[in-house]
Length: 414
Image (cartoon, rainbow, N blue to C red; front, side, top):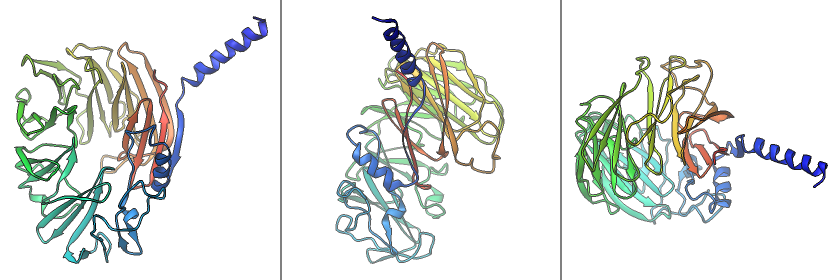
């Protein structure tokens, strides 16, 4: 091999190493229909990403007709009927009166998760939820607000604000007495103490862990309680169950509790509490192999209080706690033995106060291996704190249906 060939080979290795060490932008748009068209073209590559439909997709000349089948047309702005029921609105969502299939109601709203569409109707103090699949077929209709997770439906009962109509979407209410669990046919299969379903986690198709007013609850798909937390009383917390269904990590302001569902043993780990503020975000996520978990906390209105911990499944610190130079809302993911923290949006100073939502802006991606190797990237864009994030391998998609912004990029983690 000549000297020139050797030099070219070395340069190519350096170029590959440099390329593999940077964030790779794949797609960006400020149009949800454009994002849907892109995903339609790449749906075989990204089965974990989801199509998005917004309220504006349903509105055409003051007539709202939800799409019947999201795959019928690449524009995704389809006309037709939803399960044989044409949904028509004569007024805006905030107007006091709308019309739904000939029924006069005081409120309406759509919620969809890519696989289901729910039409909420309220007439006075009565709320009705009608569920359709993504093809527009009606699945069932039931009273009250319901929400979908883990292929189950959940409904809070006896919540005072569930009938006041101050918000056009299901809310977790601390005034609720219990949470009903419904199956795919809308039948109640069990009743649990009030649960925060949006922050819940599952171990595949077996167990679900969620926080309640009195502590963490682990239950099965028939709403049978397998474990109820008694370690921290009613302290504020987040919780996650390991993918193998054996351990539950419960995080409070100054502690991490580990419970082994097999042996029944508890272990408490101390963590630094940080600064007491009105707004705090905290997350806990298990690795896919259930060998590690990560904890993230940020106090929004005090600089340099973001902290990242990684632990083994037995509660041993896998790396030194990291204090990060920003205060942002963080999403945690695991990719092999590397934890990925996406802070969205992320600024180096306090550009908002505790009484305001942070503006859209760049996000920061931090990766740390269980051996403590840290890498940080800033990703330019209009990322917001309400964005929905999806992961497919090393690729991440961020979608904000309210602002119409979507971005996809690849993180250089092997």
